[in-house]
Image (spheres, rainbow, N blue to C red):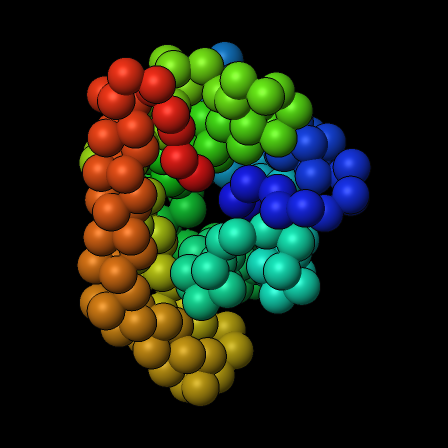
Length: 217
């Protein structure tokens, strides 16, 4: 969620803080619980909380639609909908497929959770403090995506691909086709979203290198 405009709504900082806490819990689970129980037990034990936390991002679409935040509606919808497809369409409807029961689920949670912890904390500090987010948080926000974004997208695609046959056998051919269309949508979608982050990074890094150290969001 992007920086608040002139909105008096005070829930924005709390939303970002609670979201950061939720993703921190998932990251802690990967680090502490996964080594003890392994897959597929870890998936079955965490899929519901992962789904719940990710579904909370629907609020970001609403805020963007209402103009409460600066985030472009098109990119917000693309990012949130692709993840909702994974958590609802696969985690909940096709939980017995190989993708979610493998190490790919772990790479997905790592990429998602680290990205979101940094992102939500960045927005929290930007909204609450006049000085904005700490420099280290800004650097993480606009540099980790080089690795985490491709990792997350690759994990998402792998999980969807592994669920294609199950989608047809457990539901119908139409569901399989829907997942295939979603995979194809990543082809134009990934470059657009990735280049958007690259553009934002250039602006922010330029601001950090200026004498005033001004940060853009």
